[in-house]
Image (tube, rainbow, N blue to C red):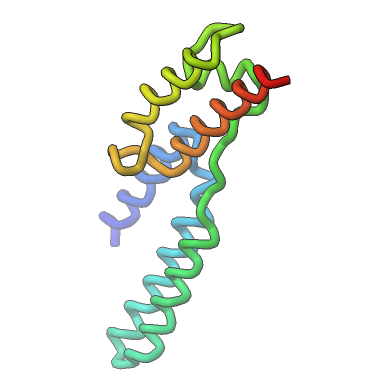
Length: 130
């Protein structure tokens, strides 16, 4: 039990340092709680209740996922894509492609990072079309 407590504290500290503790608290905490209830049900010989808890945990995981942090303004979008003010559409597209090579989920990134990069690109490109 002590090791589990140390692991939970370590995870909380790591998420706090990354600025992701509060957005992930409901996501991870709720899923873990429901998962532990399911394990307890399985342990006590109630597989139907354990399957129900697993389905609820999966549903909780899907609905409580943190929303991506989208760039609020052009300065944040430029900083995210690392392009200078007044960059051309080609430069923005090139920067987006380069950043997506590591941020895309298929390349080991996350959905949130890819969504933020795409939103930044779209914001900067919409500025050009105005």
